[in-house]
Image (cartoon, rainbow, N blue to C red; front, side):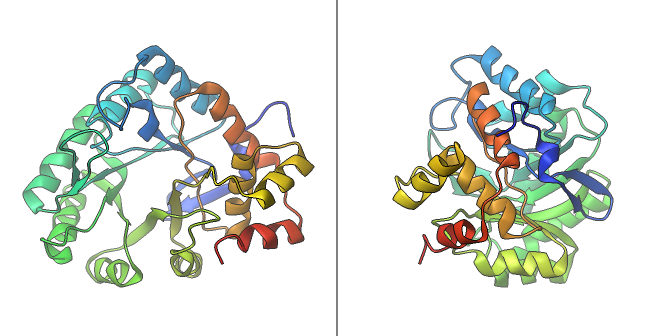
Length: 284
């Protein structure tokens, strides 16, 4: 493994035809407190992680208004503003937080407008580069939720629209209303429910962003491959995701600088075809 990890070693990926980022990003959910609730135990440590991510070539940071709530977005701006020219920040709206580890969809148009405009304030942005509907709300027609995001885009407050935690059917509903540039779903070597969507994204030149991309499954296959490469199980999972499809943009998150270095170090790990197949069979 290389001594100096860098996200650029993963190659690049195009978003929406006018943004290009390195194909290993950073998920900023874990720079909050326990249960993704309120402030982290050490704000300076959380800010050090964000600075280190940029130092390691990460130029795609994924967050959401409900991480904290508002903590992750505030820390990103406090730490990194004024932003590097090549940094793309993606955030989300459509989920509210009653308490630690509690998540409730809220896709009402009025809530989405309020959430987006608050994210603009917290992130100190004139327009959000990529904004996700965080989760479809079963109580609100998808057309109403996406319709409000289209309005916000038309007003210049959003550059590109994306969807998260969706089925292919829900993706198609959104695409009937507007251009969608990215899908973000849970996906890793042991959770392959979104396999079909990964392939759809590759075919249609959308970006697939897997959340929870690294796993602690205790699987013997992952451990054996990791040992053979002098790597960690997390690095093997990330290397598999990078090899799975050129449409995949992993966003491993952490509140620890050494874990961040480890994650970015996965960009130098190349699985053999046999190892790739073995990891791919874990979910079967």
